[in-house]
Image (cartoon, rainbow, N blue to C red):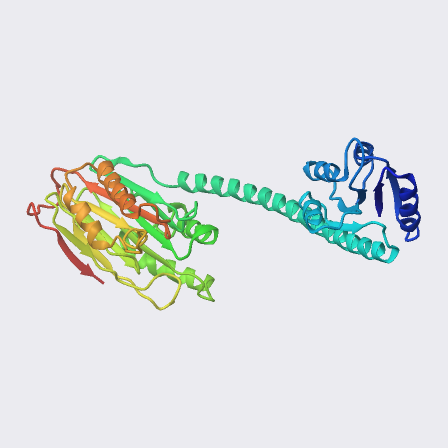
Length: 413
């Protein structure tokens, strides 16, 4: 180790140098504090052994200068003095000295104090090394986090680009939706496709879990529900329930450990007749709302997908009149909690929809989203939230004539 001996008495420096050199340390000398500062700037000094009383800059001032330095390694300081009063000891240690030796210096005591200094410096170096490792680890983690965050943001952008466009999808239909992931990307997905030219296939899907895993599974299932997959090709003939039978069988084969499940509402709507067919697998009920705010719910007709290959599903058939609104939503909406841990609930959603039915499609969805945000306040979103609204706006149907306020619903196996 490197030690700097500072004393204005040459014989004292020589004596201390002789004793310190015997234990193999490299010794630097200075006759006063000012010269000592120059040595410290140019050499890596680890231990300082300094006299108290010196010209130009005394030992106390030198130690204070060392402690005020913002650069350089830690220097263990031992103050030498012939003073032995308690007040002197307090003054020396308060100045920043690590230890205190009374003159004349006894060799054995000096060696013992230097061993302490060596142990302290070793501990300090180990802590410094660990701090550097932690700093490097933190930088690596920060870089990895930034990379992952960037990837998630891009994934979220891609996921949103796959969602449908709101507006008038057909002459008789207007649509709107909102979609809020709990963790940047979502296990929910919703979409609508025209099929056979004049009909609309629609679904809202919710895969259990959150984050990347749920989003990947949701994307995979959504691809199966895309018209190009062939799964939906004959939905108009066989109905949504039979499509869910097929989809469930496929997912059960790939989900042997049952480490996830998926709930879904899948339907097909014919705007020429107002006929709606829906199949619901473990999902919250679909809501039908007429122009006066009267409400009816289509019940769940089967287990969530991916659990039981023997599960079966049923078609719910409803006749929608002009002005009727269909609302599909994930359970993240009624389960949304505020700071007090209270859930928003299905009843609050029903009331919000019913009381604001005069709003157009976009405004009604915005109203639900706003009310949900006000309810949640500063609480975190704990589950993905999605809602799909489809409003039938035909003034009359050529193939059906319904009473103005009726919502006729029947279940067909």
